[in-house]
Amino acid sequence: MSELHRRAWCVAPTLAAMIAIAATLPVWAAQASIAVAANFTAPAVEIGELFSELTGHEAVFSFGSTGQLYAQITQGAPIEVFLAADQARPAKAIEDGLAVPGSRFTYATGKIVLFSEDDSLVTGEATLRAGEFAKVAIANPKTAPYGAAAVETMRALGVYEALKGKIVRGNNIAQAFQFVETGNAEIGFVALSQIAAQESGSRWIVPEDLYSEIAQDAVLLKRGKDNEAARAFITFLKGPDARAVKEKYGYGAGE
Amino acid sequence: MVEFSELWSPIRLTIELATVTTVFLLVIGTPIAWWLARTRSAWKEAVAAVVALPLVLPPTVLGFYLLLALGPHGPGGWIAGLFGGRSLAFTFEGLVIGSVVYSMPFVVQPIRNAFDAFGDRPLEVAATLRASPWHAFWSVAVPLARPGFLTGAVLGFAHTVGEFGVVLMIGGNIPGETKVLSVTIYDYVETLQWTYAHILAGGMLAFAFAIILTVMLLDRRIGRAKP
Image 1 (cartoon, rainbow over the protein chains, first blue to last red):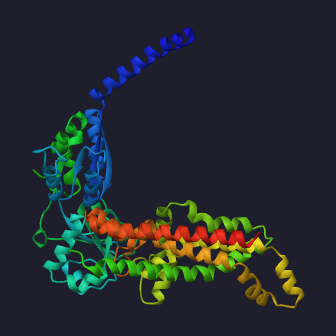
Image 2 (cartoon, one colour):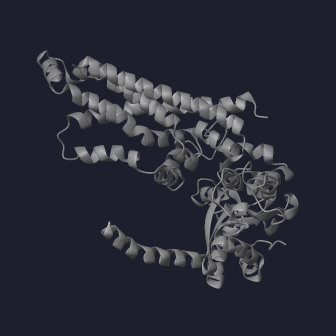
Image 3 (tube, each protein chain N blue to C red):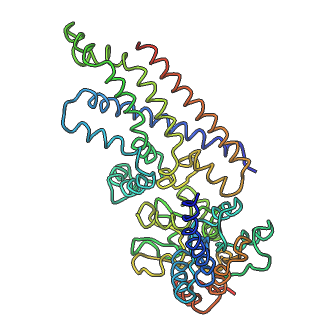
């Protein structure tokens, strides 16, 4: 009995110290879990680094297609901020009571590019009209807004029916890019941000009158309502440091 | 609204893929299993390990290598070139190749075990009766190993039906060509069309149960046949 007491005496201060440390942690270094649409992967990572450098908080990202992430959020995934590739799903998150009303804002506007690893294959819309390729990769239009924009572009040019049989669909825009990158599809519609940093290959930045603007909205989820880091990230995302990164990757900086 | 054909097409495609894969696996897997069961070669365990690799490797690893191998810079691209294509990724043929690799251990292992089980004796007897090795194989070894073939075929078929990761990585989600059952279910879940996800997923559940039960009953029968 006395042995037990002695042990408890040793344990108690240690425990108390641990609790004290844990309690102070969120004040200076909280973590925010952030779900990001795949197209925004590269800038998000860069923004995340700046964010922890300048605020001391940490942003932990998970990437996927907007639809995939949204499905996970509806099932209680531990995510606090949602950076979608469209406006519909963040709006629905508020409607369904998953997100904080009034927290939705456009953090970026995206652009799509027709891209090929081949230096001369893509010359412009003529490439699509000629159709001299076996496969064109796009993101799944049902779940990824960049895929929907690609379909819209092909429809606007009147080539969709002709190209339909050549379309291969990546699970998200990252996979569509990977299909092009490995050469399995000669061309593909990818996000400008994915190829902004590289110079090889040929590309055609699709004119914005061929598809509806890809306004990408972010929203604070209810789970992150009381997390200081989550709120700080949203503020940071609207700020000038994040804006510079977005522009570097070819995004419009949003609102 | 999803039409009936939209649900039926991936089911049919999956059955086709699993059937073709199983046939290929029996043709390719039988000599491998035979060799593994009979050889005294030092390479025996190394080859057995290679065959068993897909049991351990994540589908992403297989999918990644397959994507490169099937592509224009790999052997798949070369083969596709013979038929005027440039890549075997995103084709039914590509999926068959991927599935054969992926399901190989599930077919080879039971057949090998069956060959192992009856030992050298029946073949020696056949030889003393002047049966050629080829003749002995077909009229002695194969009938004796029949339960192994059955289990291997059932498992190979079932495992191909259940394939997801590899297909997701090399398939390109083309309806009627590479959009198999598992990928279709994934799509429905992602787009929140859960009624259809439930229909297909429930079907898969019943199918998987039936398959496992079948294999267990087969095993029991084999167990009883060999007292």
